[in-house]
Image (cartoon, rainbow, N blue to C red; front, side, top):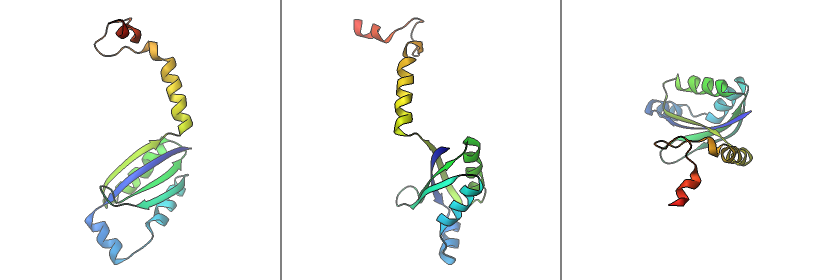
Length: 122
């Protein structure tokens, strides 16, 4: 499963509704994530630029998009920012792949056949 973090901010109307009828928003988030076939790992309220975050796993990117679409369709969130998380092992594998593909990359504005070791020649 793919792991994501979504940061969110509520609208003023959402805050008004939650204050009038307090409830556990983590339960609502968990129910939706599980309905889509995922698992919720964490739900936190925050101070600052975002009101909270949720960390979860879903089977594929379409599931993550469905989750985001469903929560934003309420109109009660003024912002959502979703990011796929990459484990340390996956990051290490990516670095190894980037190293192996290094000679295939041609930076913008360079001629074909450019090699990074040319820069050290002065």
